[in-house]
Image (cartoon, rainbow, N blue to C red; front, side, top):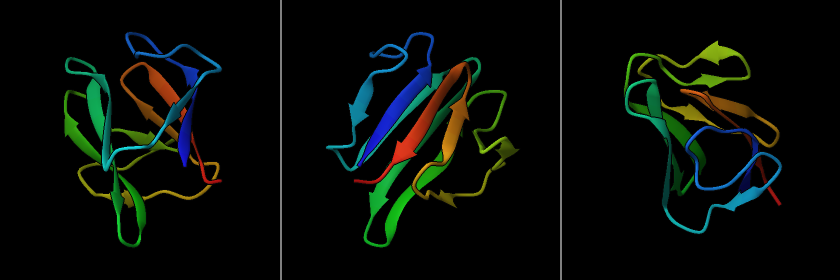
Length: 88
């Protein structure tokens, strides 16, 4: 499982690179714009809003304050970061 970076500002990897999901939790976004966390749970991977003005978007739709299960190919946007969730 990994996140492929489509566009990122201040993320530790650049567009086109891959961020392996080798931890239980991966955080991305910027505190002022919006921060999201991708967490591995027994039933799969989920994205949740952590802080910031804007809530994360999955496939162009805001998740609000809800936790959303991720599926292969989902595009996650948090702040100015845009990443695609991929299952192997």
